[in-house]
Image (cartoon, rainbow, N blue to C red; front, side, top):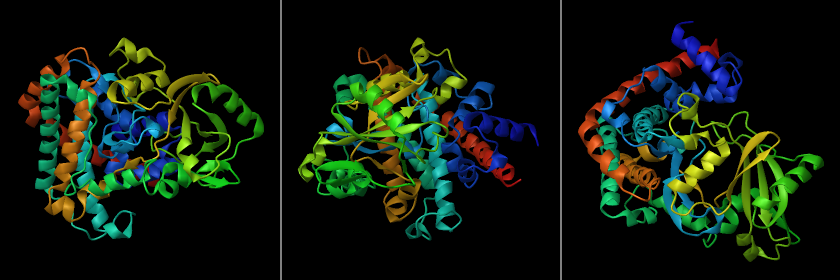
Length: 439
């Protein structure tokens, strides 16, 4: 086993608690494609920055730090309702803050650029039937190299434009991004989210609440879904109700353990609390109910290798996630808190009724992606959303905006070249993992 291969094996064992040779589901999935590998190995990205394997232009590293996503890639953006399950306004924005911290914005920017190229490569495999996916995606047209390059430039252009807009008028930070153009590649996902919101026509059948719960005799409970929900014994059930009732906004009606959620959440306990009025008299009362997630939180991925970036990063992992999410969003979830319980740190947050994620297949395959600049449209939407999230960290001044956009403009091509070179490293690492998994 060569040095890099041994490093990968040791790294994955430390993070996931299992060697690649043990063939856990996460590692098998990561070994099938470089995009999936990249999604499941965010800490490796920062290990390579720390070791000097991945370097960025010095001018970009010297910019003011801000609140960053930490695990920024094309599938960590999507539609959801503001204020969690308490609002009906559907927006497009970053949707994953588990690895959020205070750090250099270039880390998020670079991870997204790398993911754009990896998503395009992923699509090429899908259309050739080399990866398991929905049959409707096989044999569809896929974005080419030029369209991928255009998407990268569109992402950076939108990021720069949003920073310029914020520098000129800080009021733009108080507005979330809404996409309603019917010619946009995201129009259908937007409509889907609208229909699933509390005021939408599919709320009582397609919302996350409706799909997870069963209503009968004025009582709402979680459905029997052994693949996702595990019933817990009474002592633990009562302990959870006792400890977490102060952090929710109504009565806890039911509790289950959640399994099989999140590529990066292996070995972390997670519970779903069904919250609402004691009696759900009719279907109109369903809008008063929602699901609250209680999730064990571990340190953000960048902090394993960079623990001295900011004093704020010394907050416990759950508290740091709460702080960053509140800074980066216009209207954060109304239920968003952190609790210390069982000698662990737990994140408490409401699940969005209308959360609609975006898969790489949706943005790199088909006529909208390849013939109507859909891939660039998506990259541009993410660039704007990411920039606004970064800019919101400091609402007292526009120093961040004024310093970052000229630096990106000047060193844009060097940054792109660096990211594309790293794509090759990710592809090699994926092959190494496949060898370890199959050995």
